[in-house]
Image (cartoon, rainbow, N blue to C red; front, side):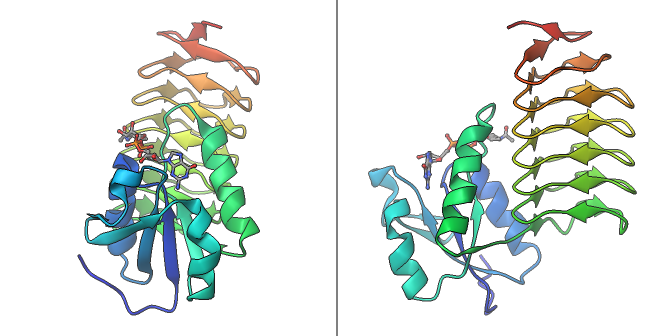
Length: 218
Ligand code: JB3
């Protein structure tokens, strides 16, 4: 595991499966030093994940800040539960940490896009011209965000999902693995789109849809 000597000393909040992909992603750029992982599971404390120590739970953040930690990223993927990811993002901000972006060196990002703080663009994903990504968004492995899409904060585009051109996704929304959203579709906030769904019509906020074509299931 490469350890950068960067002045950006980053904590990863959450130490499960997603955190491993995130460590690979951050390490691919070598511009950030990851100094530790925080996780409430005591059996992980004093172990390490890909060479990064698991230091304790979130209550140790103030001590780590006093020791030089100055940045963070949410390491929890939490499929379908973006409220937890949102809460952890707000926690890092409260403690005065800077949210870093994690953009894998083997992702393909147009130069004409905006990516907000704390957002994650994982290996093999593509973001095309004119798209805007909010804060604390996950663009997971191998997903495709076509031209002129808007993805609002705390949303998660899961592995292999595809957004065609000019799709709008609201806050805290989860687009399941392998789902396809056709062009110009508007999806609200707090929506879950089931894995493998094909979305042909707009979806209102606070709903769960699934299937081919996707229909409301709750
Ligand atoms: O499908 C893919 C490619 N990735 C999935 C990802 C999107 O979601 C992955 O396979 C998993 O389904 C899931 O990954 P995640 O979120 O890392 O899940 P898990 O492996 O269960 O780890 C979550 C970790 O977050 C656990 O170690 C929890 O203890 C920790 N956690 C939960 N609440 C927390 C908190 N950590 C901190 N620091 N604070 C919390 O409040």
